[in-house]
Image (cartoon, rainbow, N blue to C red; front, side, top):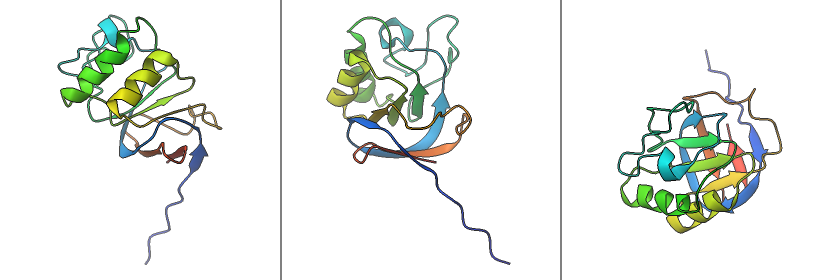
Length: 139
């Protein structure tokens, strides 16, 4: 008996930083401040009370609504990349300048403004692909 074909869902989004990554999704409804909110040496979220507090963003496809905080956050993303603790890719609902600059200088694929609401389509630990070069999220 053959297995049924797996249907891929492709969601169009805006490209922020080109690139391609496949991995495990780490999702949060909370905005992230990389400066003071994420340990740049480990990739662990250290912001008190954050939904991801104590979890590592390293090697994950990171979904969060938007960034917040200091412009130094761009350089924290860069430091995370240099320390091999950065996310594989970033998905934002609305990317702002801090995350955009950080993703671009760190060469982390990033997209935002997905054409569909993601809350019913995505869940933590799900395998997803970000094709930021073509502005696609593939589930």
